[in-house]
Image 1 (cartoon, one colour):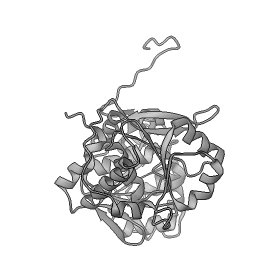
Image 2: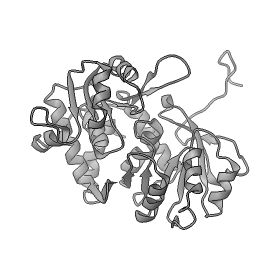
Image 3: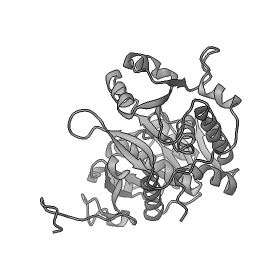
Amino acid sequence: MHDHGLGSWMSTRRQKTPDHVALRFGDGESMTYRELADAADRVSSVLRHRGIGVGDRVAYLGENSPEFLQTLFGAVQLGAVFVPVNTRLAPPEVAHVLRDCGARVLIHDPETAARVDAAGVAVPHRIATGEGTADHPGLSALVRTAGAGHPGARAGFDDPAAIVYTSGTTGRAKGAVLTHGNLTWVSLNCIVDYDVVSTDVALMISPLFHVASLGMGALPVLLKGGTLVLEKGFDPGRALGLIERHRVTMLSGVPTTYQLLADHPDWARTDVSRLRKLTCGGSAVPTRILNAYEERGLSFSQGYGMTETSPGATSLSPEMTRAKQGSVGLPHFFTDVRIADENGSVV
């Protein structure tokens, strides 16, 4: 297996399935793998012209969008480290993340500008998404005039690809350093255990700054050449409409997500016939929700993970949902789990 990490994914997808739709977003907009790979290359060019290279931190503060993924791949292609920032953080928390990771660049949605100003951290390079102004051109304007061409940085599986901040249980958020290997293997685990295929259409209603949405939602589908439907926020009625319109096959969320969908007035009349892969984490799925979905012929893969495990650790197959209700299941295919006592001895 070549040891190139995530930096080669988009250029390889451009060769293999250039005209397949990679992303659907907004009101009817879409982007092919060729367009996504070209945009990632141009983001790499924008970053490289600002002196960004191997090991530099590129922070991103914004909701689910093509720009989020373009920045991720644009950064890792240079050997830089992508730092997604939780859009729900208050200015002091944003400041902590930017300082703690040592961000050299911050790319952010215009809607977050006031919060970035209030954070008061002098990041060397700050770029808003969109067109920007004549004095401060935005990412869209910069990408249009940037050179193309795929940069040749070679990051290995042991090199850092992302730093994802997790609240943990005490004090300030801590940055979990995830390597190219971590994110590649979690993607392969999902492909194997959830049977992800190139014809899958995944509705991304959970924020990509969360490691479950990124590592177990977006990345496996992009690796297989499937299609992501990107949503900036979760509205159950709109989500049901998108499931029917785009013939969505994959959905991931927490029990509350699934409860809000099942409780919506449109639930019973929405065509969910293509929906086959439902994954749920955070806590066990309550019996009431299992019943509501099984009545529509749907069942869940439940699992356990944490940011530090990028994030998948275990998975319970839909066939075992009732027999092992409340269990987190078995280790993912390329994952080992051991049970130890307080001294570290296997029990």
